[in-house]
Image (cartoon, helix red, strand yellow):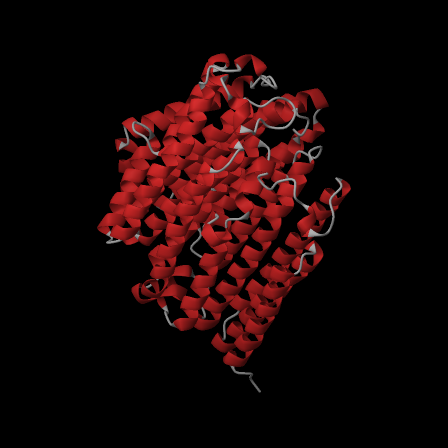
Length: 462
Length: 102
């Protein structure tokens, strides 16, 4: 009993934390306003502490993702605190949904069973659909939530059907056992399950919802869904690719190569054409997921370690980028047009500095975490023999440098600084601390990748 | 009298195709939701067929969970649609054009 409790401590912390956040609605309104984010942050911190210190008998993957999701949830809570309060959509439900969504992501990332995979994905997604529409006075949020919900529902249905085919062919719901059975029906089911994951991961032919949703969601929520849910779904993708028998992978690999190449192309070229910062970041996150699909292909040649490092780096830089967009926004709609960022770098040096660090990391320039991540991922792809794909990916990464530099250049343009359309609202201490921490993390992971890589190697080696 | 698994899977695949076509081709949000329900029902059918063929109850348990999942999803989807309509939207998916990059 005690062992079960230690193993499930992070799940319990997130589940109970969601309830506790809802429970703060009992308090007087003024007390609840300041207390709810604090309660949510405390419970979000617990899985991280568990991952570092105790860990119980849990697998290395569970500990890694408990830690990563704890960092992401904590950062999102910090970014939301003042942001949501000023814009009038803060409340107990907001933080409860964030914590429960994180619980779903954790279940999804660590799942070894198809049913837990489906339930974790659904729990994470349902909470996120509601979070996207959290800003109820804003019609864009409702539209974005619908546009997120419909592809998500279709993707989940495709995935459920794939799982049912795998089960019908193998008679087992355990991921490793059922995939080991092999055969055409299992391969077909696995392909459908991967299509379903592709919807959630916004891989190329089924990525169309992503820019609309990121543009319509409040910036901190966009940060959450571009980091937490992507990290968890990517973990499931890595797991499936690692467990699939070689003959099945031989059938699926050409399709995955095509998807990865198309995703990198669509993401990086699409980002060049955008006039909206949030859409640009959305296309950039599509492109990053293409690199991740490439790492998933090479999962048995060191791609797993590379992908885990890349996920951690990517989570930090997207949290920072969307967080900075939120911090630079006024009380009305989020600051979105690239033009409206002109010259802001001189007026708000710290917020824009954080944005710059994260953009340079997204572009993969040294000395940031993004550079190390890309380096590792391309190395793994080359070792696994996907030379053509790796070369194509490097070309696309070079294209990707331009969109990031375009926004950085806009931030430091001298002209028309006085014509600022809206003044940014105060960010609050929590969001400022998160931006500091994330920018420092992006640089630290790029300059000193050793400790994280050693931790990942010990996890994968288990 | 047992129906062979292959027959069950053919029926499930047909249901899935009907649902997929409905979700992909109809422009009405409600009809897309109906298509998704069809696809989930197809999965349930295959789960039940598999449970019968392999003689274990995992598939039956999965069906109950899929039902719960489908219900939760439909509830949230309809709530989102009501919310969006109150904000001036329609049930026609082509009526949502404010987020399109223009």
